[in-house]
Image (tube, one colour):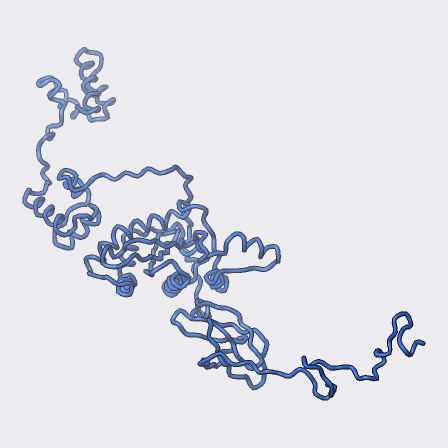
Length: 422
């Protein structure tokens, strides 16, 4: 008997002894008087067994047929053996076998094809989501065998909005500055410029503590290449002290690791380029439709990117000094700049930008300078610093000047001073 049925048994025993009336028992049970009277009649006729639910042990009227259950389990074992019940139910529905994920979970547990997975971590304080879309976006990379054994490991760069859980991802070989810039560029093109980013303390996003302390002592503000791009766009970078602090993107990694790996397998995708095309077309939109929630406020905090040259912002930018003959050295190569007509910039600083598509640009102020790549390192010009007119005719073998025979210091005597002082 269930706990509720045992409580009803105690009440009906009191009714039988005359301690309670049926109306009082109905009030205590929370049932109607007519239902209580029917239950008491069954109890009076059949004893304790009369209080048991009449449908216990009988198949449900809405139960699926044994043939349908066998077909679903066979399809699961053949095509989706490592899929979770939720994802497997979605895929089975596409195959024409519509079944609720909880029903499928029960079938799999009973058949020994699935086990309960419980993860209990350290308790942490709950942080409320931001209220506005675009107020805070979490950014992180996930290293995983996304192609299983078909290709080497890769890193999934993932951005998740804190307010509504909207996600956008980009696959790369490693968690690099280029990969982070590429993903943020896609986010800005789709949604706009967010107010702030929530990242970890990797040197891709922020400088290390020692460099930050040295910069603070000198009064300078230093950035990584990614941090410089965010500063130009007015995006604030907030660093997390633990992975759990940015739990939204960490949990989203689990969704990708569970679902994307299987989707790439079903689509027979084995390269990063094909995977990125798959992510950008409709897969991320499907995840957002499935898992995104409505924010507390309908106001979008994204800013428009109109007026920004994103190609010149999302790049590797360094400063170089121009030599007197208009040559700049960069990445161990030498480039000859074309001189300007009005402003001469020899010995000045120019900004060298390597774009994400590989293009190289030399910028002085707001102007792009034309250049040519030199085939070899230019030779230095030898300059004779010694003026021939001032050289004496008589020199020693080392090339130094020799004083003449009548020089005043040749008549110097110790203790008597020079000749003119005598």
